Image (cartoon, rainbow, N blue to C red; front, side, top):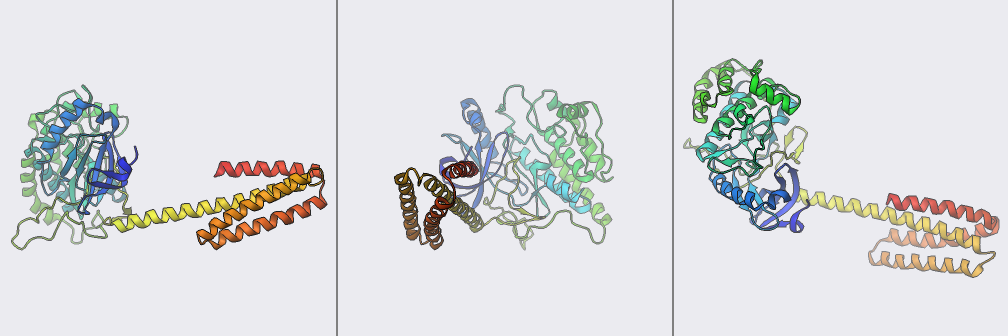
Length: 447
């Protein structure tokens, strides 16, 4: 699906597509005040389901109440019209899955910061009566070493029915809890299970339930114990509690925060003198996401400005290991360079046609000069008129190169006609015409 309405969707100007998931496409956009946001445009099969949209509207109203320092909040939504959409804040950073792939497991205080940030995010989500339902490394963005939970595309309010098909399991095997895999409704306990699975992967670099076909991973989640080898001793017992089969035995998010706070001093004392940060700092600070600490000790004020991400979207602003803040000027420059490349390509094709058509006209005129001199003259005149008209357009466009190519082509055809008609027989020239016609066909297909 392309950009709706030529790039304008409601009050938002769509700039480029960030990615796509099973629920919709995510576009980088500007709001009416020029702030960068991301707009998730629902897929047609979701937009066409009026019952699903009605249920989703109730969920979105609940999701808009979710606020927290580690949340990519829902800012706006419009679920009517041809292109229903949801707007959320975009966190400028890298997915946890990408960081782990390039830098390996996270350790020490960085791991504690990740665990505590995600636990605080779940506490904020559950306090608003929402279940995320798909917490996993791809849905965690690291920005300036701080984690942010993204994508509420399949989150559902605890008192609302799911917008998915009846009986469908929505989520990622290995991070879905056993009760959800067995058909039960996802509750806050399912998010706690996913939190632990995400932390186990971040700490060890291995999936706690292994990899392979989704059905095999789901079977191990239900019937096997998680593999927590490689997880540090201060974190492994807590993760094991959260990965229990019985959801009632798992701690709640607020308890996770409290227990991690109690662990923090021992983790800090055991940290190496010069830790190697696994997450590269962005080349530019994250605008609207995190400000400097206030002098009164309170957390920085959170603005509802910024960016959004889809759970399957791949960041387009990553260069090497660091990300940079998106600026409209860069997008415009990129678009301008694309237009220039297309213009150069069109000019190359035009020159090829001028030269190729000239050779073809010269050959045909030379082949027919002995028996059909009127036809020969007509071909030369028609080609000459064609290049003169094209040269006139070149003058209007102030393209000296175009004019020179056209004039050289006209003179070259006359010279080619004079030489070929005096040297080669008509039969030889007709064979050459067939070869040139074949080459022109190849050029046309390549164009």
